[in-house]
Image (cartoon, rainbow, N blue to C red; front, side, top):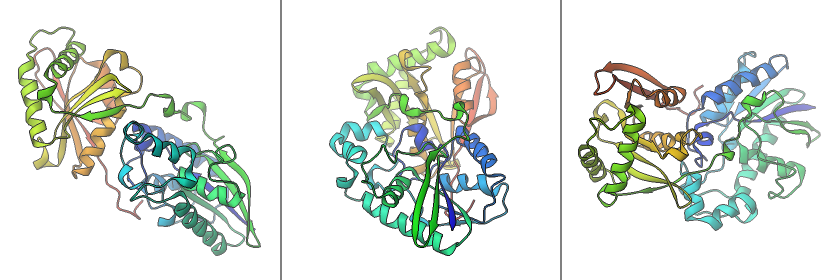
Length: 377
């Protein structure tokens, strides 16, 4: 008999930022790193003979939980990738829900009939995933194997092995990050002995970002939204410094207009439904020569602060600058703006330098954007 552990990857940027992921190859999050550590302890004393993984980074990183205590190569297989969702890749959930609500509902609740031009169907994923897991089982008779892959890929695989419809989310839910299924393979047949076991994760590592509202965006010309832009920047200044002393809206507004002229997607308004929630202004020209991208303003209205929503604006920034081939993101933060400093530090920014500011020293902060050649771990 062959024993196979099938594991969903750790929390990745797309999960945290509330983006459709598919084949988009983002980084893992700090929470994902802790989940990997907990998973590694679970497998430390389990004799494992082989490790297989999707070639996407979030799955390959998860596989290192096993190889930490077992000196084994990670064998990558593209058939274990997540569903390819074509034009939806790296698009925020809320944008898809707003723009194509019926199709998104089909994606979630009627996978048998889901069809998006340029993407895979669930049956496409099911066919390649079952082919891969069967081949892995046949090649490892009598051994114990670990396979790291993705949420929808696991659902497609497990529904086929259990003989239930793809829409049966009660029998086969979307797994928790690092949730484990246990399979036995004997005489050409699979038996599923457990599903979505995340008992290795303490409660603080089982965080559900789905409880946080998803924000949609609208790319705008700031010249058509001058009052909104200046009001947001004034409020951001007030939150950072405690007063509007020294603030002048004109230069920031004119700079935003220049950003928009160079890149029509550089300034966007954020909404929860129809309710205004924030503003993002990116200067895509600044730093281009040195390979970094610049955040001019990342702003949430007061009622949306402190609710874990800032990462969704940051996620749009990360996706944008990855598409542009940048290797880092930079911005300035006032040294006395403790809330902003805590947010950026928690999300991977580090201080590069310190310079005088009008009210307090300004810290130049940077977040590295890693790239992930397929097959390297």
